[in-house]
Image 1: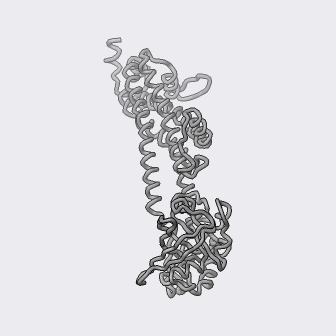
Image 2 (image 1 turned 135 degrees about the vertical axis):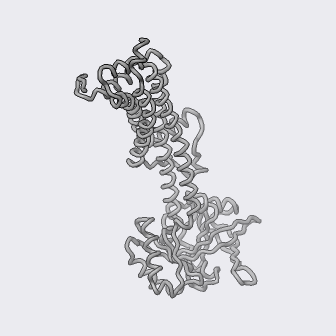
Image 3 (image 1 turned 120 degrees about the horizontal axis):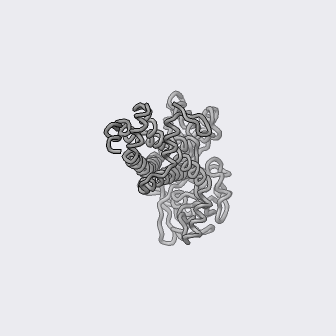
Amino acid sequence: MWENEGMIRPLPLAIAWRYLRAPTRNRFISFIGLASVAGMVLGVAALIVVIAVMDGFEAELRDRLLQFDAQAKLTAKSGLEDWRGVAEEVAGLPGVESVTPVVEVEGLLSARRRFAGVRLVGIAAGAEGRFAHLADNLIAGSLDPLNTPAGGLALGRQLAWTLGVNAGDSVQVLIPLPGAAAPRLKDMTVRAVFLAGVAEPDSSLALAGLQTVSALAGLDGRISALEVRGGDPYAVPAEVESWAASSQQAKRLGLEPSSWMSEHEALFRTVQLERVAMAVLLATIIGVAVFNILATLVMSVNERRGEIAILATLGARSPTIMAVFCLQGLLAGVIGVTLGGALGAWLARNVDPVMRFLEGLLGFEFLPAESYYLTAVPSELSVSLVLWVIALGLLLSALASWYPARRAARVDPASVLRYE
């Protein structure tokens, strides 16, 4: 059966659209219907915005970590002396852009009766590789003297504050060596203070010349690892691990591959867990809206029993009546997810201006720059995210409509019309 209301469309859809627009005699039912659509809008928008912001934070965290951690690393426990041949071979792997020698060792810094544990990293001349960007983030001093005969240290801002030192001050470096009777001690001058932008490097990272750290670590000119970087932070580690597993040279030298993902596995698992937990929590808003749709349809079916009976006597079969109320619930869901998706996408793309507006309105900062190292709220919106949330809302709306529609199809027209 068909009906022409400005356009040709199926009868169930026409009736469902009319029921959705027309107010019922019971104003409470109309209010619940509007509340269900509004709840769907808010739930979908909130879910999109929160997941986009958490994806943005994850991407920001990954990018900042990769400024101080190589995408892949080849470590030699006893040190690597002839590393240039290995570096040339690894540099030829697909996607690899640079291979950098480093020496890393755990130690202790002491100055002005203050102490701080550090990760001391020896870098090659010119601060190549992952630390090249620090030249643009210096608070004081320069990285150039690190590989000169005078040597020196570059400290993170928080680490320098902890020790109470600045560029030009002297600190004592203590490096414990396995099996040695006493640790290595050396007085070194702070040559630079940098702002890392990440809490851990800012508070526990110290840089020095490659040969200086090699001598302190007892490696006598050898390096401890080769750091590999490339365009794709996920593909490069796989290439390096595959090479290490098949290369006889890597096995002979005892090179052990590792990646930034394995070194920070616990951190990213925590981020993923928080992301899932927030998504589930916010999905309950959509769930509440869906239950409101269900309640609205149940009350609508009870109120329209007479109309349902008349439709049945005019020849409408049970599938047609079910389709009417299924489509009514689905249309409410479509309106809710469409408006919510549009609102969520707009907010996700403009989250930083919105946050600034709210901060000015409420008078406090949500993300203080000195605590979170952020000048803007990161957000990473993907089309797949919007489509996934919209599909979830539509699926739940369709499922919520089935039970009321089933009840409507079971209405007995004879018993209803007898008392009309």
